[in-house]
Amino acid sequence: MDQPADIVVIPRQEAVFWLDSEGWWRNDGGRFRKKKIIDYFHRHIHRDENGYFVLQDKGGIWEKVYFPYEDTALFAFDIRKQNNEIWLVLNTGREILLDPETLYIQDDRLYAINNDERIRFAERAMIRMSALMEEDENGRLQICTNGSKYVITEK
Image (cartoon, helix red, strand yellow):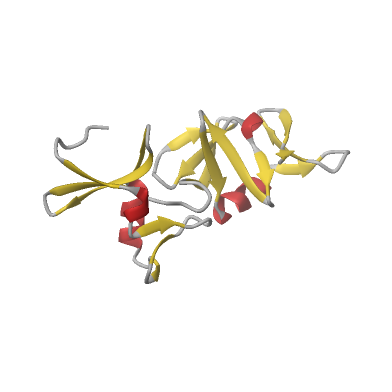
């Protein structure tokens, strides 16, 4: 990602917005409601050695705002199947190939790991994933893809 030369860095503790555990942007006024603003914030999530941030142009002044998040900064908002592969459509707009061996459940929520990033499945993606899941003979959830079955671990 190319960044502008002059950037004002806003530390996490000074950010006026945050991402809640369901993937909704919030500020002191409550949940963001305007889709255009919500989409803008999601698309502009980046990560560096200091964590996740939103890079935004504030009238010619670039701000790199490290924001707090309650669970994770990355969410699978949707999935799509292509050639027996499952692709996660992230809140950032990126699409990544799901490695089913990285799936796990924690506190009744489904997660995946991509490299070292934790991705939580939002409601829509979870509903679509449920069509690919079944219980094995021991009552554990498993996902069936590419002709193989993968047990989803619980943490």
